[in-house]
Image 1 (cartoon, rainbow, N blue to C red):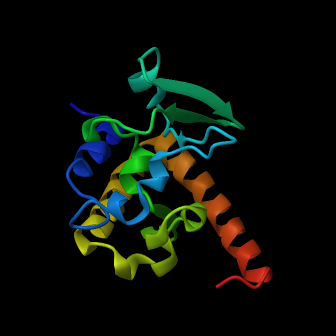
Image 2: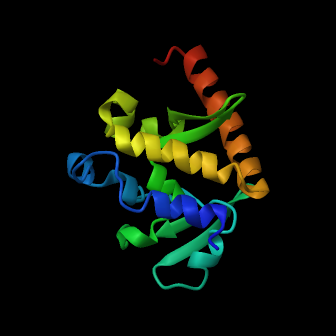
Length: 164
């Protein structure tokens, strides 16, 4: 039987933010590091085992999390969970999962500035469903709750600084 993370990853295997390759809009900026720094995607709990020791991937600590640094090109089937849900984030609320535009994506993704209305509704719904699956696992739930708190803090800060 597949664990919650495996089921959530599988659910998102064949959906993308748009019905076409959204990377053509921005030259796949989310898959590239800035020239002066290596950026990457947060790994969900347990994902590091999928990438540890594999050529083309580097895992680095990022605070209490792990960051996956890649070459900028991978097989779609190998994408980490953070890439599969980008530019959205399933946040934990009292009544379950709510899908929002990830505040961190606003600095990278042109679609994030337009919000969920610019995305394929099937993609948005599957991100929500994946979030519900992840809530079934204690480690995934704790991770999502922490990401929710970080997201809410970023949104509040952006609001106080006059952002939209």
